[in-house]
Amino acid sequence: MIKGEKFLNPDRLPTIWCPGCGNGIVLHAAMETLEEMGCTKKDVICISGIGCSSRSGTYTQFDQVHTLHGRAIPFATAIKLARPDKKVIVFTGDGDASAIGGNHLIHAARRNIDITVIVFNNSIYGMTGGQVSPLTGSYKKGTTARFGNYENRFDLVHLAIGAGATYVARTGTYYYRHMKKYMEKGFSRKGFSLLEVVTQCPVYYGRLNGTPDPYKMMMEQKDMLVLQSKYDALSVEDQASHLPMGEFIEDNQQLSYIEKREQLLKKVRES
Figure 1 (cartoon, rainbow, N blue to C red):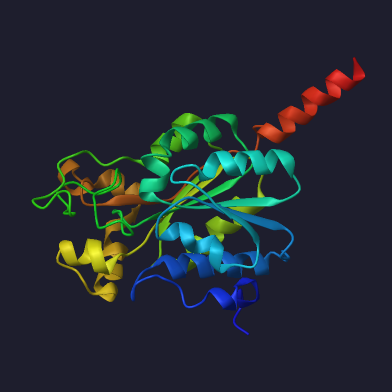
Figure 2 (cartoon, one colour):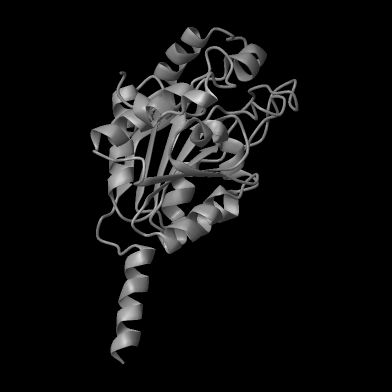
């Protein structure tokens, strides 16, 4: 049996994802990491909203909630408060997390709620027709930007850090080992963890932007993602076509929301 396979639900396979989509790579990395950590099917709860990547939890044998568009994080928050003993993982897309769900992400980070949010960033709304998302790069095309997107791209890393997240990292499907390393840290620690994973969508994003070959998309991803030190050395013009990758914050000193709540309840009981 392939590592991580025991957590998948064979009755739900094959997936709905298009050939060459990177979502399966991210899902398998998560399942493999959880198995290596010694987790059981009863240890984890998966939450997701709406979108291609948000179907991820439905392919697992974990308890899971497939909820409304943009509402995965508040559901995850409520579940973590009710069952603090569980690992609560949110599978979400760039639109689901940064557009309609953006405010929920901000306040979950502010509260430092003990959940791990994995953002599948394919830079487009893949399930609903290829519209541009807040994470679509400058002058990249979508069905709602046929001549190129001239909006500024959202930076989820800076947003999450500014909002108070205590673990933030970014990688891509090309960098599988890095992805697993960051997932393990996010799954095992207390506090709000955000992992942005750049993934390929050859059918919509790739086709509209001249790279319908998933292999070529991953090679482009390899070049686009650079370590922060290299990114800082680039010109402003070159920075527009690159993204910094790595771990941006790992603060294990701050108390999580659950820990603060328990401290307060203890004081109330003792008073």
